[in-house]
Image (cartoon, rainbow, N blue to C red):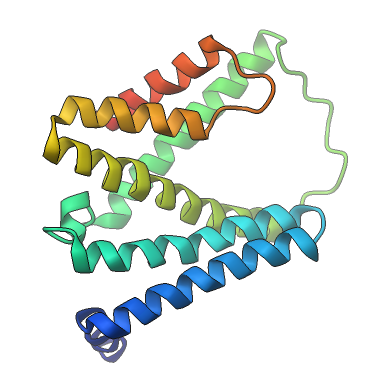
Length: 194
């Protein structure tokens, strides 16, 4: 394990190799997105797109490590118990989703009529892994880089508000979006940024 850590550290400390690695990761991400649209069907389209965001995440973290003042710790990525914090955040997210679905079913806003297809536990695990990368990618972009950049130049409050608005614009549901929907997404994004 130590050898692979040293190898990665040597690459990350070499600016030229780091840039090449970031470009390779970016190319893999784009390639996966293209093949997911052209050649795959069903769940595999979405799963491959989500997996591509793992490559995009690392392609972005390399320049942050090299160029941003303070490196990865500047965007709150430290080695100190990362899995505990990510686990707590994931647990809170799952709890919120379960509570939301419970309220929707109890209030008859949503009706559960059984499963159309049998459950594929392998696919569920693959989606869970892919969503971890996708959510980490969004956190790095919106709360890491964008919020940090604005907070450094203006204020933390403005960084939270602007990154929350941009996050909300990206997550607007197509066609069914209303002003209330947008405000709700902005408010929950601000809450999670605190």
